[in-house]
Image 1 (tube, rainbow, N blue to C red):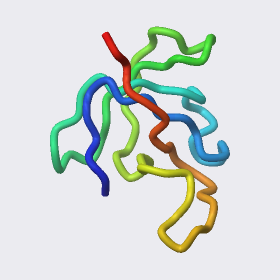
Image 2 (image 1 turned 90 degrees about the vertical axis):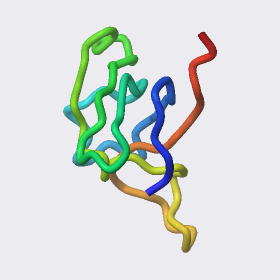
Image 3 (image 1 turned 120 degrees about the vertical axis):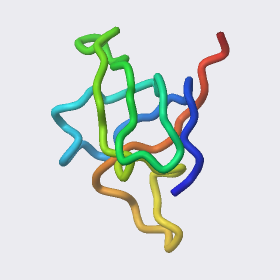
Length: 82
């Protein structure tokens, strides 16, 4: 798993199992090795609402090491500047 840190922004790979969570989330906190990640929703409907999402959903990129597009989960798209 890649390094998950507070203030990172993630977007869904293609919905699927994550469809009941917001499309875009910002990491609020994560303890290294924990099974879950605390995030805040940022897609209009989920703005400002907190969620706990399995850490296994979070990836550095929308494609695997073999170049195959991920179907579920989140991929890193940026970091908040504030």
